[in-house]
Image (cartoon, rainbow, N blue to C red; front, top):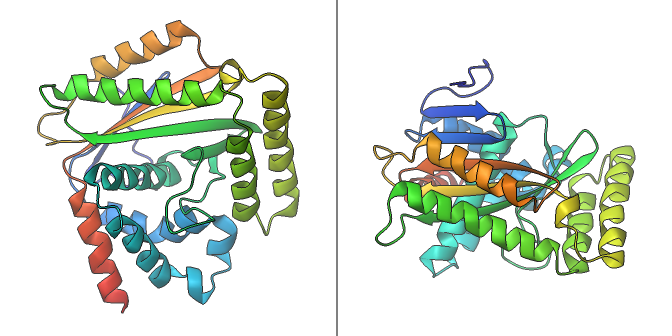
Length: 276
């Protein structure tokens, strides 16, 4: 068992298992360290690196909180709220535990008061693109925690495989546009990323079946009593099953569990109140 213990990683409340081909994160409690991690990275997560490093009134911490809370509040369907909070949590964990992956995809959509369309997270590591598809939910009816996390991961696999193989050029155009925003102040870096994503666009144009050419993270976020954790063996078995299908170039499975998503929603609301 490898549990990350680097000094710059929050240890309080988080158990992180790092194995070949899969990662597991248990949020044992919503600690002050994790709250500080959200505070530190929220503007980068929501608006992109360039905007966060050159903040304006409309994208500072206070207004980012306001916009985020409005987006969550407007999701009357609890399933959509859970999805938003789950994706936000994954962004937060990636910003700290996966620092060798650079995020190219701001959480906020560019066109409307919503989260973005297209891929959940577009990541860059060693000049290679990784697409992260996040599925979050409460425990499924008449299912155990192990069965539910496996179903979430399977939905992530099916959804991403379908979208990568249907010739949808808009997905890659959205990825290019979001990367331009995220890297607006980094011209050299932006050009490299635009070329990489542009190649994915032209490859998709030439051949719609791009799943086998794409590196992916398949992520499941389970909101369920942390006293009843899913087992590492379930994640390992699911990872091996997905690999055997050879649907993607490289695949990493990421499974996360936290007791409740409402503690994050309540935290964001209280943060906004303190900023007013």
